[in-house]
Image (tube, rainbow, N blue to C red; front, side, top):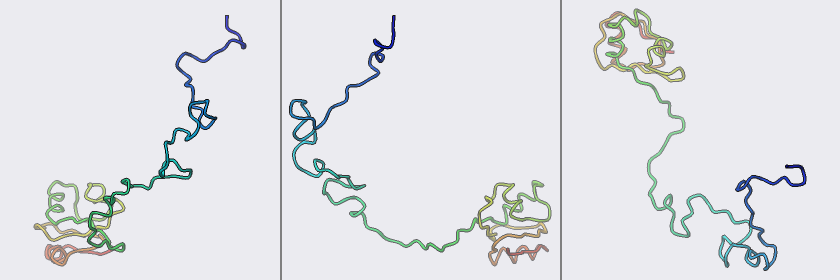
Length: 150
């Protein structure tokens, strides 16, 4: 019969913790399981990310080159032949805007879109996106359409 005075945790559920720095008799006194000398034996030690024991770290050995412009605008390019295939499949009729391109999975809603001039456009389309290449704008207007920049 179990009662409050003889309750014990289940077998194996509780581990005996090391009692560190509680004198030589504990078996974990003296250096308190940290070994002798060196950075790891000192208080306040924290290893830097990428530290390789004093060897020259990889991020300092590998040469750095190039430049990334933080003000660069990335455009999602869509070619005229892709638009023509959507017209042929009946997915777009006369107007093309960002919502229609997102619906057809050619761009995501936060993308900046640029129409590029690869391929041939036969349909008359009114296209409203962020940018057009010169050849794309010429091809759209040659087909009787309209290219409007946002």
